[in-house]
Image (cartoon, rainbow, N blue to C red; front, side):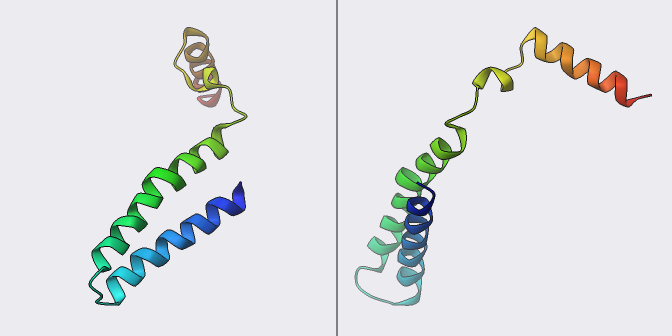
Length: 78
């Protein structure tokens, strides 16, 4: 998955750069398809890859997590 994300990012960057660098009649389509690959493929794949083994409850502001944050702040104040 990691290598797929890297390859798609490089392909998308290549499409965007070639759209700006070469003045072709399809240069706007190259830029648009590069942005579309980033937006619809790379970002969701990257988000899934980074968050797949994490528990969402650790990042929610529940009463228990707020109490833990308050306790850690009290310990840091000395």
